[in-house]
Length: 312
Image (cartoon, rainbow, N blue to C red):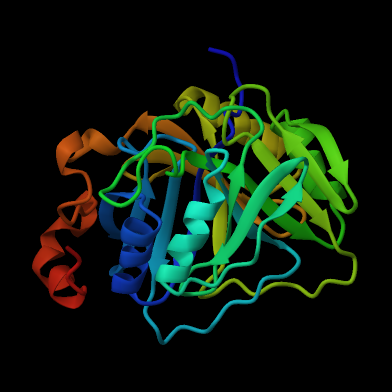
């Protein structure tokens, strides 16, 4: 199998209150809640996964909801600063009306790279965009009672990374991941891979005097890139190490296998596999319904469940 990066696998961010986070993404934004588990490094807190019906790579937004007592993050240099979702053309007006109804903070529609987009903030201040792609996005949307296919999100369009100097990060994208610079607008450089049709874009914004961001509540924790299987994962581990970057051993994340490294601009990158997938511990129709624990914490289930806020 060809050794390629297949665009964005998932994006993970930090939130405050778990119920508020769940309500916003499942009810207001209309994503499917596909997995309720815990932070493997801190089993006293949740790890939520939202996506399409089956949790397809390129649709998966995950959160560590650490509670309202955590410090507020700050967008800045050395971090992923915006998450872009693809929506059908002509749907932004629906979303503006919906954001007005639910008191969501948003900006009026604007345009970049010839595409209309709508910027908004989630309840913790995470910055997201809804983007009307010029090319049709044929991914099957998850529908809810209030959000039907003609308006629903399709998954990621792009992620934006803000940097003082893009050179090192661009080098990782092009020399290791196989991305190419496809367009430029002012200080925004658009990189894309041609191995997939969607979730294929990374925008690098260069702001030489921008202060370093602070990763905490309302910010992106890391960006994960997709590979097909473990063999290809380890191929990229060798490539990253050969470039002189420190990278972790393979880590089992229950639903995928991962490597982590910090790229030269300071952003935490992950490379994650398609296997084994989200149906490994519950069937399609039950995704997100039960609390799923990794094997090492199953013996502590009662203790963990007593500590976590119930989410239905």
